[in-house]
Image 1 (cartoon, rainbow, N blue to C red):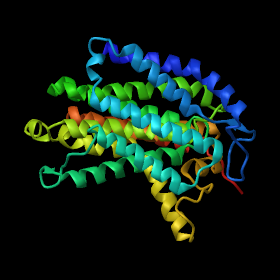
Image 2 (image 1 turned 120 degrees about the vertical axis):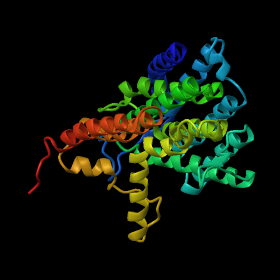
Image 3 (image 1 turned 180 degrees about the horizontal axis):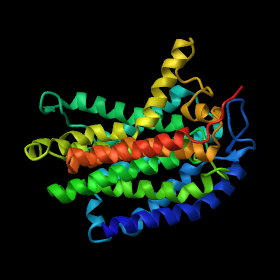
Length: 359
């Protein structure tokens, strides 16, 4: 645990220090978010925050690679995750600067998912009527779908200062706890790869937040949101692909099912926002990729909440869903229920407090 915490702190410190340098380059090369009718920010703001995150991740990997425990996490899968992350950041930086079309971005996301497949990061089984081993072609398709959906779910919530970075940090904490406890409690040492990935993921989010919290001095852009989505999806798929569910189902059904359920739990808020947006736009006769100002954060802002409070509310809702699911994998159901009730109560109180009634 100590080495993973060191990894987290290193990645956070590096991201915090690198981000101002990247911000200056984003201004220099014109990678700026201009003001549009649906935007919340009021001044042109540099993008390319994802490049700062990727740089911090790359340097962190070089620093911690020789640590006794964390070093064992470096293998074929970790190499594939890094290469896929590099590809998605390049795609995102191009989009942040030149505004690529939706199909080009989708093709790039599929390409990044293909890199993961080449390096063995793939869904191998599903918990349907017990456990079903998937044919390679079906497993590859499911893997690509999970990667693309997760990337776009994170991208959809990146519409307000500090929102996506905070939600993904909370999601990463929940998933790190699951991956690490799975390794400790059941002896799956290969679960170290997702533990490493999520430790770095949380670190870069924490290091980026001081620059991105309201009022943001830099946005993560698509380079950042797509990177965070890919890393979270990669960690989830790595756990699912490496754990033999039959080896642990006799002792606990939680760890058997959680590798697949937890990603949806930790990303519940982004996924709900994504689904609602697609339904809303298709129902109105528009493209599901057409932007609008009716996301969850827009609605909370319209209710009279400040940007900081809106972000905090969505952080709490993410934690309320994600943390009890993680607890459920390793603790009695009553413990998970008590955790859920406590978090839900606090979240509802905060959500309802200080609401303004518009005439």
